Length: 441
Figure (cartoon, rainbow, N blue to C red):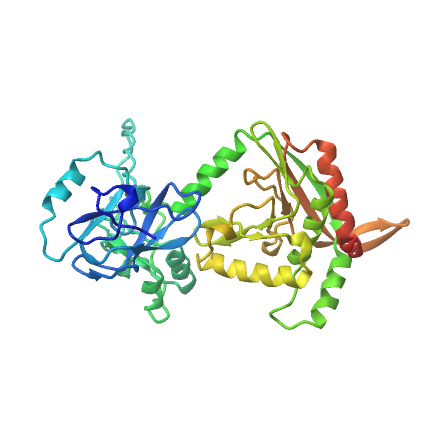
């Protein structure tokens, strides 16, 4: 929520006023937010605004949040447009009385040091021309047909990731699509309005055709993607990480899941990942050094297992948290994960729903990934990367039999977890999945 206030009043006497033009500042909308990206303005210049009315949507590092005005008035000026970033406290607009002169306030804003708002990246500097060499004469090929002019003023085609994916699936030639998003950006709505899309363009090629460097487009990164990059860089550098991998036979889990789901409705059905979450949570409370985090001069131990579950969304990755997963049933975990994942994809998670995990799980098994490593999410001390279960031959009692085997790799912060500590946790986790009754002990 954003407050718009008279600057000449003390903090103790700040009340919503509309006596003169005022600055609209970028508010802090999440605990880790340092800057936000204006997704879209819900009001245009000249529109009336009621107190407590939502005036814009802001992409933070984790979700799209509504920005609300505490003051009634008129939106006199939009300073930071849709698609641009603004730091906390940066002026993004002006509110006041309809028709009033706000030129002095605007001049003072423009005279202040400009805050950086990421615009489109400049085109790369052309490489120096190569040294000329003598070549036999050859016919000059006809140049390829130029693409249709892109809506953006730079001439580059600007497309949202989901629109690009939909266009590829429908066979849509984006050069013929008019973007209706900010700055002419081609967005999901533009592809949906094509009623099935157009056919793929047809080109003819000859062996003698010579083309120049490929055309390209650049997109500004979302705030979420920028924060992901920053946090992963912080994690992989200062955290001394080591990895442990274990193979787990999942036949007992698969059998348990089948039995559970026979008596449940669709909304209650349990996935393999839900059972993995419960097993991890149960193992965590038995191994407090894994359910912990390193602090500058101490180690923090958690009484319950708040398990973060990685969810892929359009702009990157977010990890909603199942609180006290060690105390919840399989069905409770299943329903909570479904609800959190749905809110994550709709970018409606609240900060308390994706912060404060004590341990995380990243599962790529559904994508056919057999084994991978995951990066620790600070300040947690560990994360497990779960691959898909595959049927493989194993030797039992001198005989070859087929088992469903899943690979799990744990990334450990060595400041908290020693090798033996991590290995003992994985052994408990493995025992619980191979003998699910142990989860309840």
